[in-house]
Image 1: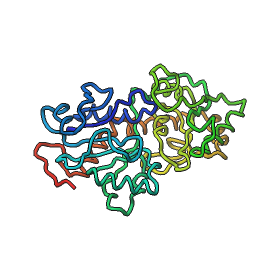
Image 2: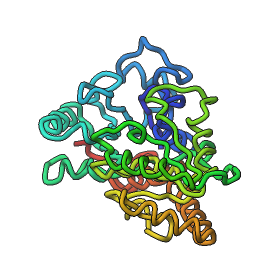
Image 3: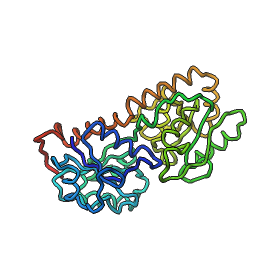
Image 4: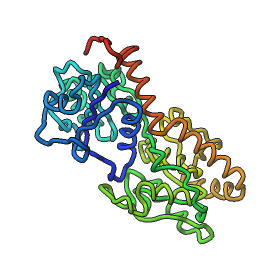
Length: 336
């Protein structure tokens, strides 16, 4: 399958899940990038008619993935995709930006631009469009991890618990439970607790002590690590990043937990602000159970949520959505 993926290079962006998905696709399929920071990028090329022969001089791509811009829903990184003879997909991440009137604007935008398929990181992205004509164009494609960044780095377990996330040191309406949990944990002088202020959204050097691979190493140095889904109970990338760093995930149960394969007491431990200390005490008092859950979570992450597994999920999704044989020579389908 040949795919043109239009987006700017996010390898130095704080959130590593975006580039992870692209990494898996590029290694498993014939996926070629066009955007600032990628080899071969030419800013003078602003239409698909110009970009396609530049990136695919040998044959047309079977699919285009064009990312939504950060400012919803103002457009894609390049011009209008409607009228193409090639199907177009996009990725929906921050679905919470599209409630109410903005959801209607997004629906209109997807229709006008001729978007065939929407890959949503979160189950809630599909729920926004339930019962609408666009519902059939949505599928869930959860965040994934690049094992070169998130893995078991065999760090000494020098902390009992860690919690590194937005909304811990400063209260936010988006993550009120994080502040409550942090306040409880930091008051415990008997706990070896790893925490720090959020490094800030944006670009960061690979040498930053709490970003990327170093973030995974920090998680890996803890026996347990906390995250939460916020007021919308979103299954953020940090859920699988913690699992992939071979540390016990302490987290509230997100919407879509079953899609991630999360099982309380098996590969993670469900918590809330009122019972987190009790659950933590039990795990620390039972290191064999703690080790078993960490191992099961690690297996889950690498078997189902690596960027390579997600690339295979993407391939199967395309076969289901566009028809068996999509991406093979001679495949034909009727575009919407």
